[in-house]
Length: 81
Image 1 (cartoon, one colour):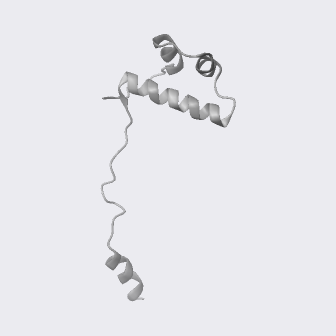
Image 2 (image 1 turned 90 degrees about the vertical axis):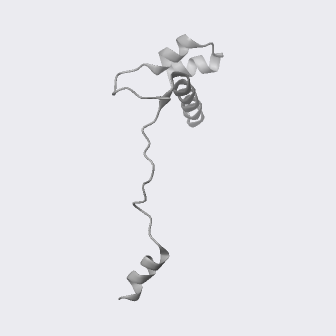
């Protein structure tokens, strides 16, 4: 998968509408936007489908251990007081 290009203005809804056929509900969501919480969930799923089709990968970084510590270190902080 490729990474997302530098913050270009991408109209993903229009691009997705042009690329596939959708039922009436999906077309309405992509054209008019979400009107309720469940619509926003459904729109989020459509966005995820768009990202998979385009091969876009999020810039998530792996946790490198900045929050890792042993229980002994944690317990030692309280014993010294």
